[in-house]
Length: 140
Image (spheres, rainbow, N blue to C red):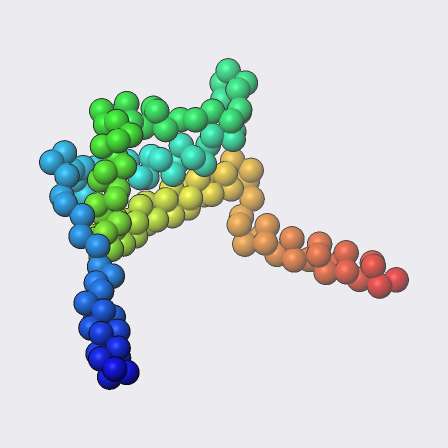
């Protein structure tokens, strides 16, 4: 009887399949459009707490992203679920989004530094020097 129970449990464990397959939606958003949308969504999420020209804060700009691509939130959600099941595709999408965000960050930082007239390395050195001086003053 114990052998039968062991065989039954073993069969159940091996028959379980952790890989979930989602059907490809009829209106699947293409990879390139998904990359652009997710990029814009990250920007929208990052700026939602900033004050806009109308002096408003905490605005939800996702509706503007959906309007820009003429896609509703349900279509995006279905496509997003499909791509999350295809982890290799989703990873490629997010790596590209991260790459584009990094480029934007570097460009923005360079413009900010040029506006302030400060070299980034000089600014870092000043910051380190200030922290060392502060630590020495605390010891006195």
